[in-house]
Image (cartoon, rainbow, N blue to C red; front, top):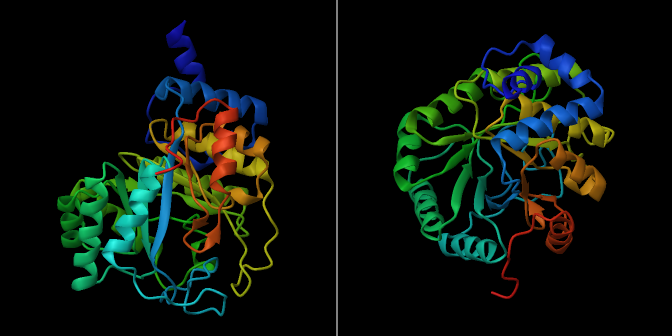
Length: 329
């Protein structure tokens, strides 16, 4: 019976997914899709936990890239102002606070095209070592990096490096022209070669087609091994960026993306990421049912809003997955 179920649901790990079958998956009746995703999810995550991660912007604004969705780009006039890089002590204090409030993973972002050697990189390494010494997973997102930098981050204890694909290869140049899709894939290769786990996902709501969504998932799902962490983001349309007029997504589209990611990459942490402020409690729960098993926990995601911590804690408590958190550190 189990073998029959495994075949029918698709519990095996695959790296040979075709875009057409992923598109068909995204288009199947929602309840069937969620059932399939939940079955896969419970097989690989029987403990049914939701990991809490906190994201801090260490270097804000002034980025040389022209990502059409990003208020930190130097190409656009937004309310985000360029700020000095945070000192090591401030970052580690924020990490301690995140741990005290229940986070297991501390993510640090630098608005860079690529990592720069010198003191700023040495400070990054010190931050990584400090975060790990607190017993937290440490994730960095800082643009492109080379093999040597990836190796040094690995030696410092970095758990994961985030570098999203954002969208499909075919739609990519409608969103970004200052770096290529190949550049992004090469960065992932450097990360993987160094022995660091890969955090890589994308964004929906950029104006892409459903086929673009399927294609982006196909690129991710044919990586071998799969990314250990897959953030699923919905566009937060920020005034001053080229995508400021983009309409909000249908929340059920986000549910479908979470479900497909869970089926395609069964062992990954599927992270319900940017755009969560526009989701009702019920929509978030649907995403969890579809296989999302991580959220960012805190008031901000780099420069855009995130649900209030207390509201998140209440939601997780109401659905029975809130672990003990020391709210008075």
